[in-house]
Image 1 (cartoon, rainbow, N blue to C red):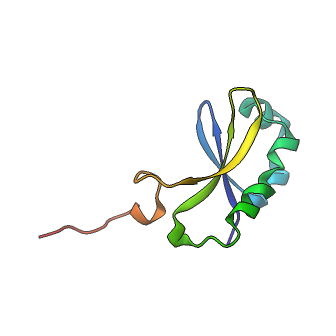
Image 2 (cartoon, rainbow, N blue to C red; image 1 turned 30 degrees about the vertical axis):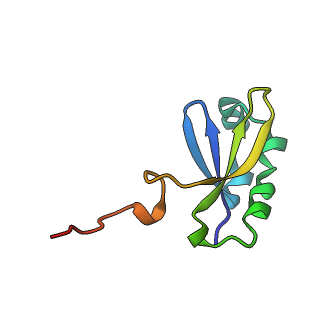
Length: 93
């Protein structure tokens, strides 16, 4: 399973896969207003997910607090972002 972290920025959420980390440019970091050091806290999300299963319906996210500090936490899926709710679910008749 690929480790994924959702980065919550002013322009919306960005899904970052662990394999993408080495390819993120300085320009992207400036645009997202995050340091490479803070982005490398990606491992905290991986650690938080240990022992979790898909049925737990949570994902790791990183969000900037009002004091400017980036925080990694678990967040539940909404009906709009839940992968199990995507696609054609059929119709009741």
